Image (cartoon, rainbow, N blue to C red; front, side, top):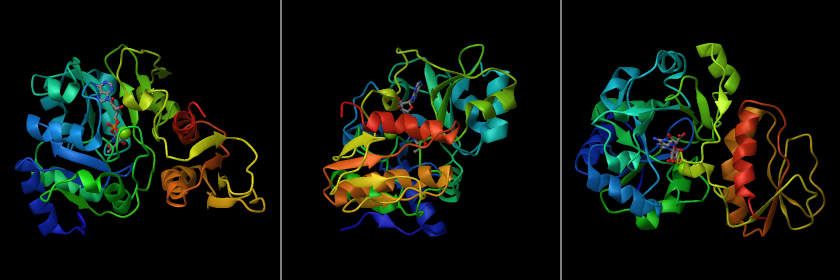
Length: 315
Ligand code: TXA
Ligand code: MG
């Protein structure tokens, strides 16, 4: 049995009703697929943790339909956060703000802050508009593993943990491919908790403020654990691939004899878009080692290197 469903207005309508009834809906965003639940329903949100196998002290992002819904979930929103929301929503950016009474402990894991995002994917936006309530959604993978960028990858990850009324909405391949930039907006200036497609330069240009990377270990971003985003295969960075190894590298790098090429991106955007599918392919092919030649540069390249460092941690 498959949970994957093509999308039209009727499906969006029944998916919104299923959310309201406490079921889980996995849906595409422009970054990666999310595993969604009604952000006001503690039992539904509890199932997200069960299905993901995620520790309960990791908070969730609340997805909203537009920036008009920000002040339902957050208070004391600083001017620079509103500027960022205007400039980059809908888009691959999550803002961490002081929570309102609506953002309960089961969303924030007891923290006084809440993470909000308006995703830029027509299916995600249609679902949010139809549901007209916040949707809590982590990436739709088992805890610690690679985020899914297709509906099939969601089913591979979570199919055996879903229930009959849960659904995976198919929106094809995600265009960005790495998770949103998370920005802590609770201090005088923006702090980047997780790099993504919205870069430090873009944040600075938008706000006129310096955007630093946060080293606050008290902030629980599970994607900031040392080991995360890991396939079964051992990820080795910037090494020479041996016969039988997988290889992910920019297209101008040739494939050595006997090496299994998993991706050949021709741009940074292409690299981000194809990376997670290539790491998954290494597991489908039962490879033991995948060598990854990292991209140089800032912005999205930095987000790619951040994820790769965690995929390779301990190897
Ligand atoms: O692109 C994305 O952000 C995707 C799509 C589905 O929207 N979502 C995503 O969710 O990556 P998740 O749960 O896999 O990663 C969100 C990260 C987690 O590491 C979580 O700990 C952190 O955001 N987070 C959530 N609320 C937070 C908060 N109040 N303060 C700091 N970090 C928070
Ligand atoms: Mg995740």
